[in-house]
Image 1 (tube, rainbow, N blue to C red):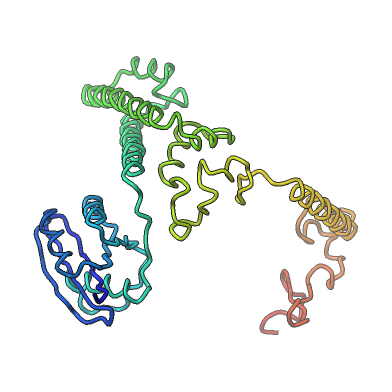
Image 2 (tube, rainbow, N blue to C red):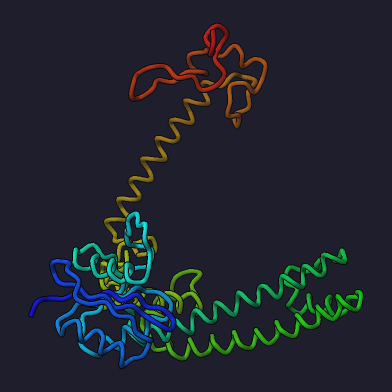
Length: 347
């Protein structure tokens, strides 16, 4: 059977499904109400051996899981990674057709389809981050009310023991007092919710090898470790879906050995030796350069001065050393500071 390509423009209530042949000829285009049965039937009508592409937009989880369960090869289009060209007309049918066409031509920028377990973990991690952001907004409102009355915070954390003592002792107008009390009650409720989700995340990941290993890094605790595991995923993630190599994913053998190339990986002894010799060479060159620069400074100029105009005696400095340097590409002299008399612009 001829291979077919199906593009789906998914919306909240309705979707458009566009099918084309391997040559780009239109097979069908239907608009359906978002229903699992209707979606399965519409894609099945395009052909059993169909490559289906859907954009990673609002609410794509259920559609991708359903199509994968039906046996289709599902591709997830990156929302901002594709070149749509200059389209004079943009509608649902055109969007679905362009998705199928990009897949057919091999030009589709794909996103990684995270498995359901990873998506559920992300739900916990991202919702906790949302709660923290909302709580920060409430705390900012407390500071704003205090600023209106000219009250300065006595401690850095106004919601710790010292800060609460100051807030309890505030004597403000009734409107400001009621608002601050309401905000403090909401902050306490958000504290409980954030703590609850942190416990849920830790309970789900406490036996995860990558979650445990990454906390050995300085400054990485439970919260950051949970974000790393949820957003990067495990070693089954395709290499093309992320700049993080599959063999260096959190919890992989190379991660545990510390042989992954990266800013926080443990370097090998050969690499450490090479870096040490390179640093020594750079330091020696830097010391020579500083010595030469200091020898050229006028006697009355400070050693920390960065210009040749620090004192009046610097005017006696040789112009060729102070004002000019040789351009490495053209060999011409280039002025660093103000040109001397008779050689400036417009002279």
